[in-house]
Image (cartoon, rainbow, N blue to C red; front, side, top):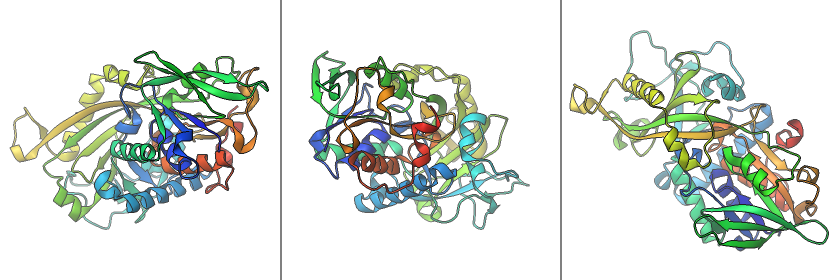
Length: 419
């Protein structure tokens, strides 16, 4: 099997490496990550909500495959305890009269729950949710079709599996140069350690661009003469990780996890996810205008205080509680554990791009070996579904590169529809 260099060690990169390593020696797989801290953007700071069937037709099979792969991995490796894998019930406080395509989320600030049908909630709403008279709670997921994980712990587990299989991790490092053989075919990638400055040439015939929101920059740095600029932009999202005295491990065992979707002011649809570890994730403030920082770790300096203030107000309203420092009963206080800002890669069509980049887009001096012998591939643009679609993406990309039958139809997710 061709030696593979993967640009990006986020959830898509490590998922791809994980599935590649099932059918080729791990020592032939190289993960390259420039950020000083691993999983410092959406791979570690996303909500971790997963759905089986909330997708448009082009990515429906990928979504279903990935959801099943998440369940299988959790069953096999103890995901409930290691990365908080748990079935989830999705509920909404408002009914959506006009069902929207889920891929519209990245353009109009709509709630992802608008991709699902709402039915009256048959059970008791979660105890951490404050109710007021006149609220109508609807369930927006069928049993067994949504789930919840802690994305950071999931990514850390996948990376450990990769390293156990002898996958090589270059971190922090950049892929800075491709070299070709006498036939002008991709033969090696030069990787520079960003701390020591040391450089090594890794013989390889295959490159995967899986750097999330930073994929266009990673591709341009490695292929500076390319005629293609990757058609990926970014959506930035602020978030809070909080604790409420109304949500405990015992409550989780009794009630299960919930994903709550609300309608609010135009452009702001709060999403709140209760996790198995007793934490609650609050998000929904998304912006396409936020400038992408050079590295994921640089995002922390861009956290906008006004957005955090709004998220905190949402948390107090939804939990019916107050924060430390406010007047009120101690058993009603919420604790904010972390403020976050992460960047999700999106495409104009609203679905990810999975496939081979044609040789003619790489520049006049670079070709690749045909079929499973080589190639340059792209796996990015998942928007809010990077965690949910991660394992399916890794599995399909590995199959595609290794010349095996694909487990899902991703024929409408290639570059052809966006070039």
